[in-house]
Image (cartoon, protein in one colour):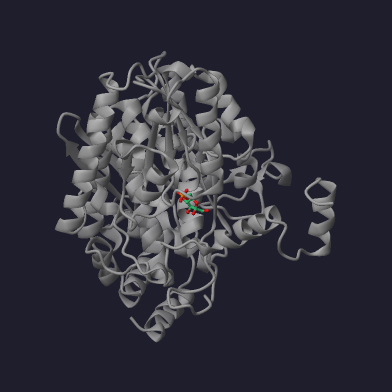
Length: 516
Ligand code: F6P
């Protein structure tokens, strides 16, 4: 890859004329079949499952698709993809590979072997706790933040709607209210604490962990540290902190925080759903790894999604993208995707340190349908911004009520995507501007057969690869996150009474009682 090749590929993209969605459909009777695909997999003991991905309601034309394929080639997509799974140096600024794929069986033999040994170790502890080896355990308070919390929180919420083997509370914020809320819902005599931190140094997590131990001790638990499990890439630090080695579940340094759900950071998920479903989640993710490794160009679902992301961000100036799951089980998905996409690709320099010449990650936001229809969809339909939308829905219902509920849910989801594209005027004479809908607003659809553990893993892995593909097309490193460091340092300086602050912050510190 040379920068002149990628510049030429971008110039070609910039020269292509944009068509409306209506014209794209009118001019190509095969558009739906060309821009939609099913990805299928069959997980032993869980059965076949699949997802229909439909990108036909986006503005990607044949010309754009060919030009994006040329961009992928110029940007070295094939080499980068091979490096990702082969333990190559895909995170150059931190001098590391990114081996989260190995945690679900997609990586080098050595990485997968190590991952499977770690998984077996976690499985033994999970089974032992389920079998009462540590006494009666009914509640688990999982303490972690960022990537050490968002994935577990989402997965537990998504996968335990019908059956829960453990009452799990995920606590991230250093605001004591978050921890107090968990305490109020748990009986200390039957509560375990999971301290999840890749570094085992994060202030929020270590402060919350210390308070949780104190809470156990203050409430009659004789050996509070005996109730702690550590999930970390820094096992020495966890032992030093007081966790018995037998309850330290390590994971490799090369697994990034926001990519760590598949590692021991997923412990609360396994505790809540059991190892069998946890393994199904890994298998679903692995099925997507296989698709991502093997499918070429526009036939690669995550790469195609990245083409659409790049189209809207770089060629149409969209500053945000929205995700609406028409499924209560995925209510936390926008929060999870915000970290995955914005912490990975919210960068201003390329992987080699050059300033980027265009927008990088859009702001990811979203919600759950149908709630969001009655709150934010007004702007999507009639606002001045163009917001590409992803819709996600499951054909099989998650609930057991009258099927009318699920039917209405699905119809609303499909109707919204149709309405965004169609537009029109809802006034009697068809002329009232207040009732006019411009239409031509894009969306993509993820229609899954059944949102079980395997499909959940598949959806998350799909988005990991979409994020990676976007990074490759933009030439940036998605695996570092130095942008979070400056604020952390300044908070530490404030705590230590060090550092010079601007006049506004100095006055605010006084007003807040943080300085005299
Ligand atoms: O501050 C950002 C971050 O480093 C995330 O990338 C990470 O997921 C989170 O903090 C938590 O870090 P740790 O797992 O080391 O506690």
